[in-house]
Image 1 (spheres, rainbow, N blue to C red):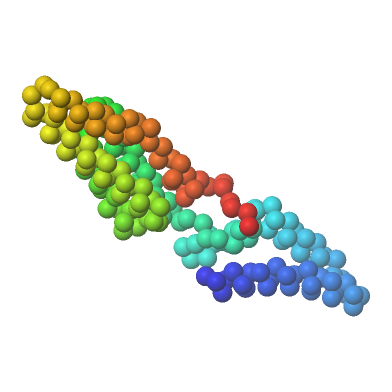
Image 2: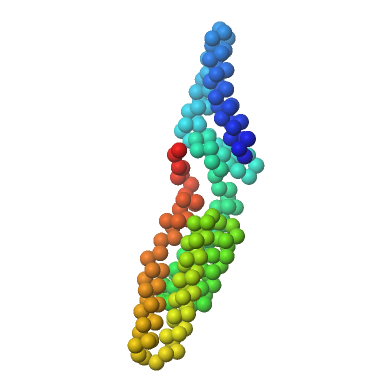
Length: 182
């Protein structure tokens, strides 16, 4: 992939150099120069992309863009996290179904996704497990101070789940028109 980037950089530099050489030696380099200007304009307007194998290379950032299959992996993981939040919101606590969803998101992230998403899903899987256990514990207790403490601990986790914003962490991987300018 690095060889391809270097090759394209050399080609983009060579096009205007050849145009100048043709003009200097009195050859018809103007047509070639116009083509060179169009290539450079497309590169700097971020309109030119080259598809090589399964990757799409962007002239401006020279970074690989996600393939459709990679984007589907990120999107599926994001959907699992959102389903966890929705299930938790619907029933009001972390039930077995919600716990399964967040653990599945964590397992998939460990296999396929970057470290920041792995840490994010791991943190929420641990919190979901804690909330699940707290809920099971207080259900068995009679009304009293200990039960109230467990309910309050679970409620703190519930507030955190309701404030979750998974789009903030996934957006940088899924957003199509965002490019980091170097």
